[in-house]
Length: 154
Image: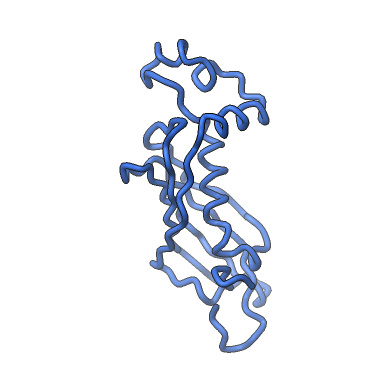
């Protein structure tokens, strides 16, 4: 395992993990919109976006979710068996090209699965912009490997 990837046993309810930050460039924004074929003026047309309550381009919700998820992957990159659910997703403030995001991951629940070699962990992602404002939050419920070595917690 990598130095930052953890097994089920290492995650304790209440623990928080900081991630690296990520600048969302205009190029990232436009490439994402092109990839998923978002053709919404709010995302692509400066003039149209200027006439909205947002006043300028904003990033699509799935871009924010994708970048945040990528930031958190190192925590369980080699122990995750699958994502079971996404719950309680809330977009709290607009994210724009040029913003820098960082994610803090909070462990909010954990339990062993019916197969004792696996556990279910609920992670709450708190996504902040460069000003420290919470812009997005969601709960990810993941199936995580237990450590095959007894007594080993990482």
